[in-house]
Length: 102
Image (cartoon, rainbow, N blue to C red; front, side):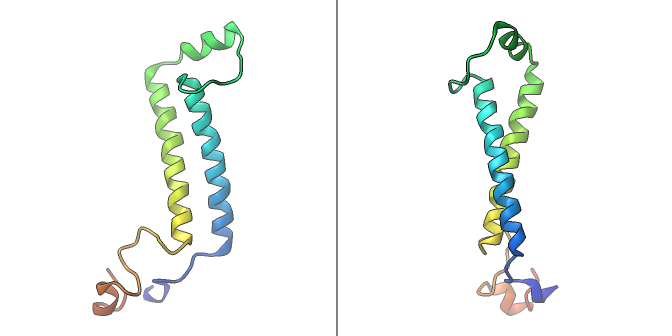
């Protein structure tokens, strides 16, 4: 396991993380339209009534889902760029003192 410290993630991970980020940014856009933070496309009165009848807990879950997914996708992109969330790197003290294990 210590031989994996500092190695780059596979190339397909960058593609998947980028697609996930784009997907989640679309979700963020629709959330912001839903809470009227930005202007969205014109909707009929029926569509507006359905959107306004959504319970607060569902809107909160919507927000947690889209913003959590966006942060997770950014984390995957950072992991692939070598700036991951790991405490170990080749220059950190733990890799020199304990052979790469934190």
